[in-house]
Image 1 (spheres, rainbow, N blue to C red):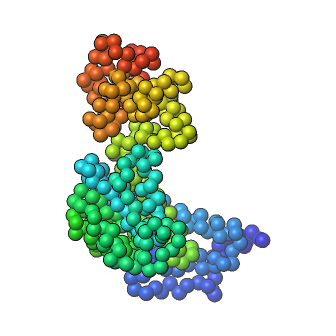
Image 2 (image 1 turned 60 degrees about the horizontal axis):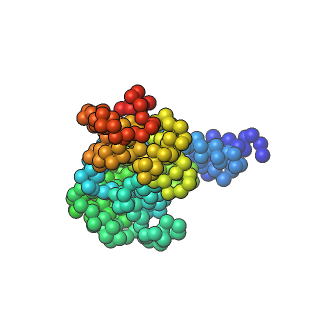
Image 3 (image 1 turned 180 degrees about the vertical axis):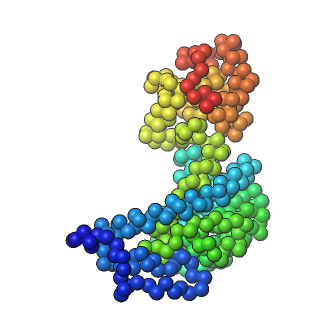
Length: 347
């Protein structure tokens, strides 16, 4: 292999596409002139070209951030009112939606059914292609029909033309849900079925039409950002800590100890004892430590402030709950309590 073989060729008269495309052809389906000589490259050349093209992904996501922030705020408002968020997609887009939704329970202790991923073809389509599933407008309408006025329906489609996604958004919109399309096509036909369209303009793929590449990467980053910002808005984090984590295994149990130890400046023994007093609930333990209240009072503060550690600590400070507990000699924060502010309290 020569160094020249590792570099994408500047020209390839034999393989170069003409640049002419059928009208309204999605950019994701067009030939990429920069990868016309793809099959003439060695492995390093292919990887270099893919990496170079991937630089466009961050720019595409960055351009969409204002629209994405508006969606986060709207979704948070609806979820506070008891609403839900639903992703609809086919193929790669559908799998990414299901993946994002499934990660929220263990990471943020999100209740089942609050954010749901739907994929054309159902569960079998997660591991194998289901023929013609994405072409079913009726299946999309069926999956989107159960939503209501407090819900948000997010369709994900690289070319923005998937019938399944159109059907889901149409049915959800008719039921009163807020509808949004996330696509990689500025002229996506399905955008007509949505109240808003978030465009991730990643252009043509290195392998023509293989939207698991730039388009899929942009979708993954966008869903990561959306769901993370949504969970932050809903009080599922404190500072930059994963305080809502569900300790379902040994690794996560140790993580809760580490978070409490670092956040509250406790030694390992004190952190474990405090967690035990709080039935293993990290949020309760943090409020006990920073607000200097009893575990039951901490749990009540959290329940009254949508589970937000920050809001619960602030409320305790505003009402003097910690001072009252100390005056009553309740031992609310145990032997770990003192009169000095905890690191990060109210931060």
